[in-house]
Image (cartoon, rainbow, N blue to C red; front, top):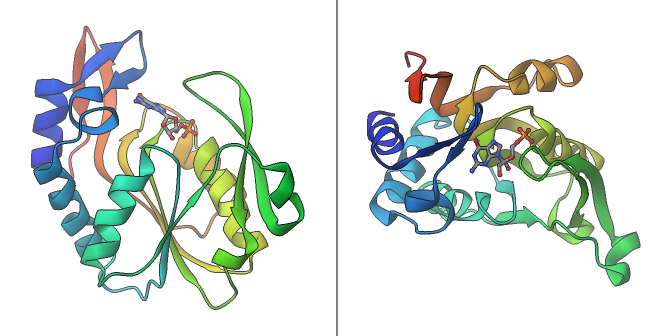
Length: 194
Ligand code: 5GP
């Protein structure tokens, strides 16, 4: 997606060897025009699929999930919470996720009331790095008996192992990304061709 790639080049910041900070337009301040275009692009990519619900993870996945859901004809969005509440424990599907940016494990949970066997789920997250967050979301959706239509990351870093890591456990999941970074080289972001 050209607009997204251009914005990453113009406003993204490279941290170390493998992190792209996108606070200027996604993770802190949100470029709402870009967000709307991303929603439209997700609809275009998954237009041939029947999707009843979007599943994402708080916090950064929520705006993309909402715009995609609006463009997919106002379907509901469910977001996994990052801390399990003791009160909800038996009523939730849970998964442990190792955070790539914080380097620690946390638990995600989704109330069993909000996912069901009749759901056709599209999973969305802002980044695909090593695939841990995506795998946690897939586990939660599988536990609920929902059908997973695909996983969509807004920004994939293909030089990391996320796609392979997901496919080694879930070989049938369709994975799409809107911008795919093949390398960070000499303080420059290089993209894969669409
Ligand atoms: P994974 O679970 O695939 O290893 O990492 C994905 C999660 O880590 C995303 O939910 C995202 O919040 C965070 N993340 C991974 N890489 C980056 C990055 O380069 N920049 C930012 N801002 N977040 C990242």
